Length: 256
Image (cartoon, rainbow, N blue to C red; front, side, top):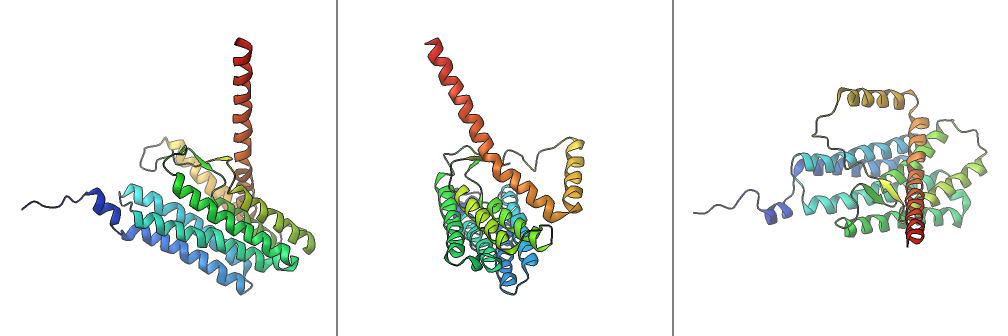
């Protein structure tokens, strides 16, 4: 009797694997926990939970690829988890914290962010086979969430000496920027070209240790600064590409 191959593509596509989906569930829980903590007025815990969700979300896909347990179910579950943890949760945390004092401008900014995250995830799922895997099209939703969570954590930790009114409008600007940046065409480096299963020089391990030490020195300041830099890096790459394309066109006109 012929046996069904264990690596049948159709069977793998419909399968549900425990390990990667456990990380996805943990990321979903962290996003939900952030909302609960924000409602309870514990905004520092809410911000840290969003960062925890970001770490867990980064692990589920890599674990699935390392263990060869990718599935269509996992992809859809991951997208729904991302919508909660990096779409709804950051917007609600920011709204409960300061945006609610801005009236309709506050909830409109929160909605722009949520809509941007939903559109970003929908576009990512439909364009995954046609885009350059080295770069994301638009600011990825976990990084957008980190911008908001980093700002909240930084302010709650008394690292910002801003008046409350100015703090609210700064939160408004960051929320709007993050929401709009997710639906732009600016290229943001994806890091997918870095393979965890590949051997690396010893200095790479030392660099990883140095990064951990650097972040641990002052997590809210360092994390917010890093994600501000990353949140602007896409525009730098876009300007560089635009300038290079313009020079190529000018060169062809001169030679033609």
